[in-house]
Length: 279
Image 1 (tube, one colour):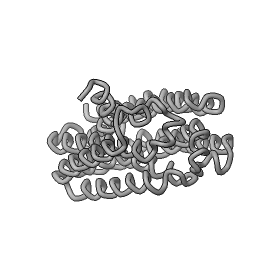
Image 2: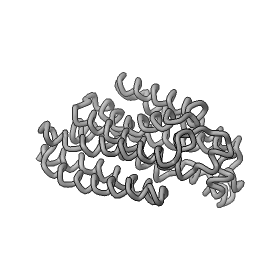
Image 3: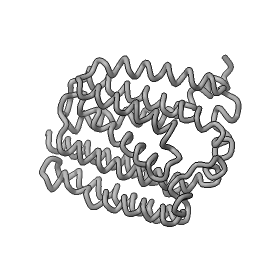
Image 4: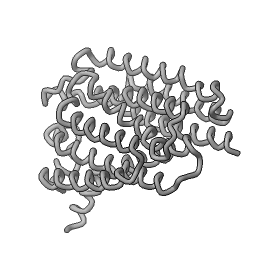
């Protein structure tokens, strides 16, 4: 196998994205229970990494024609990986994720099953429906925290808030990304939210979702479940999210990238807030 093909198989999984999803699962477990049990946390994080990599790969398989317009440098359009190879590779990754998930408690397995069905349904049926695909992706993004907490057998109110904030932020980011991809999506006949209602109304809907997330972000501190360092860090994340929302109206690419940074910063806020309570 040539170096270009190896690079193609790695790239198609979007490894940074997959590893980040695993890290978010760890955050959910840590916020729920602190340090441990490490075996369950490792299995949950590993399952998330593999499932996310599989989802990214099968998404590129179904999006290969759209990517020839929007993302011509991705592995399938540029010929580094064939469509059939991508499909087989995604199935292999899914099997690995299932094997790890089956070692976890029943609630975590149930979340994994729901996520698997939602992921396949999104890729095949929901992606081009106005807003529906965005909501599915938002749920999948937020559920990494629920999955981590379920793996250690303890879903707390802080984890539920973390799930809600992540889901809202992810839906907003996906809407902004749809605005960025309007040209290719329109050519392929997809009816995404910005195509259905217009780009500016779609961006305003993303802004409203972010506003709700920002207003709800102090809740874990006000409930007494996370310490004051959480409030300090999440305030910075909220500021970056607000800036990203403004940026998205003139530069959707910059807006959604900054929103991604803010979401990871918000996840870090939950970690430091949990540490403040534990110490």
